[in-house]
Image (cartoon, rainbow, N blue to C red; front, side, top):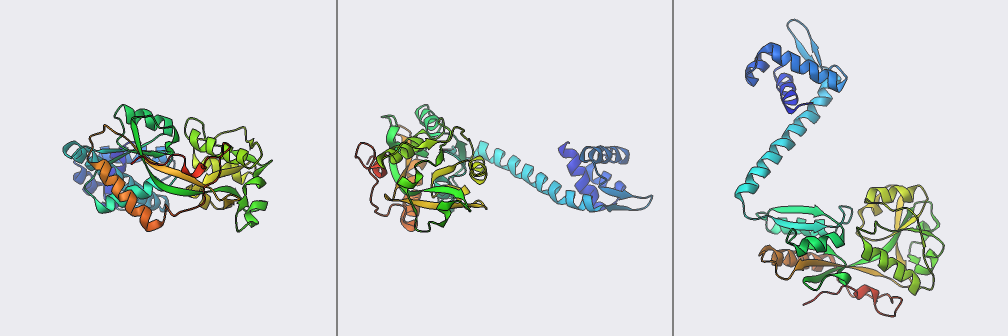
Length: 320
């Protein structure tokens, strides 16, 4: 299917006349008719009712018209954005771990609301890859757990995210409205993230279980997307230990409950290379601080003890 076929179809749907539509598109009527026929063959349904003197959209054609217009609008916006990028100031390159976690998306919405002129380029990558891209200059700023950041990467703690467990609605944990005690996880198959994507979160969860006196039962499979994780939970194969910012905690059929005994928070930090000259880094940090203050992301809470007795919640505290 070609974009010109969609354009021809939209024009014909507006004119409902092959001659006028062909004139608008600066092609001969026979060429327009051929392209519409090819489009119908590819779609697999008749989009137009034709007679000698009349053209009408079929119900399928009317539905197709809505989507075709949206596709052409998206292409137009993409072209406009690409052309603007050539002439605009350098883009701020931002790393996000997974679109399913909402901390960085919220920060970026805050940033663009206050500074609409900043052009953003978002790169989805696990924390280890974000470190590499920060080091070689492919990223300006990223987000993650700062406990294993290289010496040249500076961090700023921005959110203490309540840790909880995602379960099916009919799981016994779903009835624990006040939270799930960490020792109750013993024996439950725990789904961890892909090691190349979220090694720090995996280590955080494992250390939390060990500090509670048990070795976790780790589900053998892994997933690379938040949607796939929620699917496994819905199939009753495992439970998923994730922060509250995990968007699939709102997935129909699943329930997220916070962990208690101890209450535990996962620390999210902004990360950037200390030699990066981008003037926008300070702007992102300021937007994140404003958002954190408004939403209470850094409210004091009791830290959870790790296996070695240190505070899990404070791993990854920011540098000044």
